[in-house]
Amino acid sequence: MGPGREGPTPSRRSRDRESAVILGIETSCDETAAALCSGDGHIASSVVSSQADLHARFGGVVPEVASRRHLELIAPVLREALAEAGATLDDVDRIAVTQGPGLIGALLVGLAAAKAVAWSRRLPLVPVDHLDGHVASLYLQPEPVDPPFICLLASGGHTMLLRVRAHAEHELLGTTLDDAAGEAFDKGARLLGLGYPGGREIDRLAREGDPTAFAFPVARVPGLDFSFSGLKTALLYAVRRLAPSELERRRADLAASYQQAIVRALAGRVGEAVEQTGLEQVAVVGGVAANSKLRESLPGAALAPLALCTDNAAMIASAARFVEPLPYPAYLGLDAYASR
Ligand code: KG4
Ligand code: ZN
Image (tube, rainbow, N blue to C red; front, top):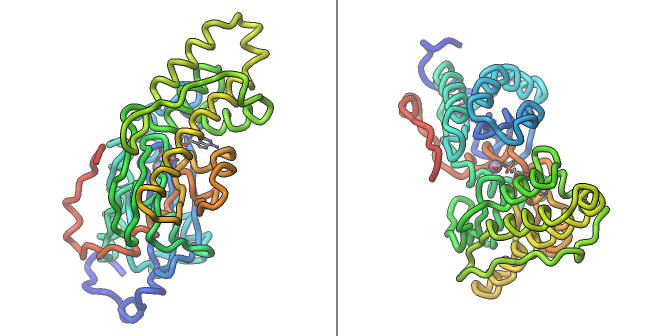
């Protein structure tokens, strides 16, 4: 099957919506990811190649370094996703790719790869918003969550409360006025001299600390919005007040107290959103949804499985299940976007 072939193969045409095979691609930040999912939400394979180690020595993601690494990894990651599912491109019915928001150079690598694969097979393509992708991590098997629900989306770039009305329809109830929750974890970790990405490090160290040792503030902003920049400054001052040896001794207490403040802010807002909307079902997605304290503090909530909290391509393929794809060649002119 070369680029000259027109139209889908008969087997492809006969595959219904449920059994359609979707190849998802995600490269918005520092994870190069590809996954194969079926139209009914079963994950056949999900490969995530994290560049975290590469960026760790810089204490955060360096955009140019990320783009170059995506370029090296995208073909092997795609091959691995197909191999893990025991599939070839002949089995794929549709391509789904993150179009934004994210690092523009990083996004372009995934988008160009997706266009190239889709073009070579005359396949339809679905451009996916990364945040819709995070929400769609809840729609995957074996325990899909059905709308309506209140969704807390907390990642490195975003912190939002959404009212999800249908699979591809949601309304923004609140967002952060400054830093995202994941960003607060990452910046806090840097102040504490911990590694990158910081959320996981704080989560780990906090287990050995006392969450009541330091009284960090939970910002009071109007409505259902969030603010984390004051908290970060409070941690900075607390760290500065301690002598180096004392800081070493109190590091776990600082991590536990800081984490507690972030989790309180998030869980508190979720409670208020439930009260205001009357919706009882709550779900949590995004990298920060991996936080053990946050998971503990929302016992009734549907929590995205750990492997699907941080960036992955299965969630991108999942989001594409609920959107009409663009037929060949309508998608060839698509551009990536850095912010919504
Ligand atoms: O969703 P994600 O992989 O990427 C973005 O879309 O931003 O989220 C990454 C963020 C990082 O800020 C990272 O520190 C945070 O998720 N994170 C955590 C944990 N694991 C990852 N934050 C708190 N606790 C964790 N266990
Ligand atoms: Zn993300």
